[in-house]
Image 1 (cartoon, rainbow, N blue to C red):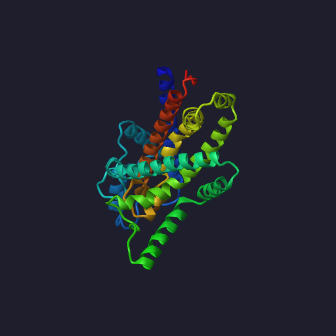
Image 2 (image 1 turned 90 degrees about the vertical axis):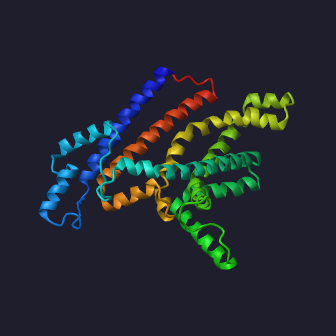
Amino acid sequence: MARYVLRRLLSGLITLWFIATATFWAMHAVPGDPLLDDKATTPEIRRNLEARYGLDQPLWRQYLLYLGHMLQGDFGLSFTQRNRAVNDIIRDHFPVSALLGVAALLIALSGGLLWGALTARYHNRWPDHLIMFGVILAISVPSFVFAAWGQLLLLHFRAWTGLTLLPVAGWGTWQHLIMPALVLGLGTMAYLARLLRATLLEVRDTDYIRTAQAKGVPPGRLFFHHQLRNALLPVVTVLGPAIAAITTGGFVVELVFAIPGLGRFFVQAVQQMDYTVIMGTTVFYGAFLVLMVTLADLASAWVDPRIRLE
């Protein structure tokens, strides 16, 4: 097990190096000037800014400096937010994105398990068809469309009843968390429900399930102890990427609902060509994804002892 973990960590470091390298060269290949005219009003000020951010160095030297600072955990200073380090932006705003991601994950897990179990239980009957229609809709429609629909629904509810069901946007209370988390978790919920339905139906037709039925095992114990437990393995396998996808996929949702999370700052950095914020958050989320995938692999071995990671 230790050798497997070390190999995964080594491959994760190589992946992070590739992500950092690709992001660096992509940023410098994009047309545009990160030092806009309102920042560099005179040639002297521009030269000082270029020296401050290392833009007066050749690209190969900028790349080496960038890798050296990244190895020390230093992502540099933001181009657009005066004297603010990228590390401070990540430290201050990632907890907001993480809280939103955890709430969305809880909604996705509970809903995915519930709807997946119901569709398998009522296979080829009207609950199965109705739930699968909703699943396909949730997978097909982007999250920002659901965000706009959710805001319109809240606005119409307020106009019809004169009551405020939930805040339309903003942050600060638990009510602000409900609608964005629901919108963000819908896609993952639908994917998990579809995956669980398929695995439950596959497990249902196995020999050991029929043997347990012949022995008179109660339906509840048969479902939870035998069928559901074995069907959860593929769900656990995709949980790592799903957690990372929910956390990193909230960029547009955070922007729509005016949530001060890291995703919102990433979108603003792309719009303003803030190189250091873009590269820092990309590497940070890449490391988060590698960690989640590794933990999911270890959890799979814990759920099913037949899996050998060595």
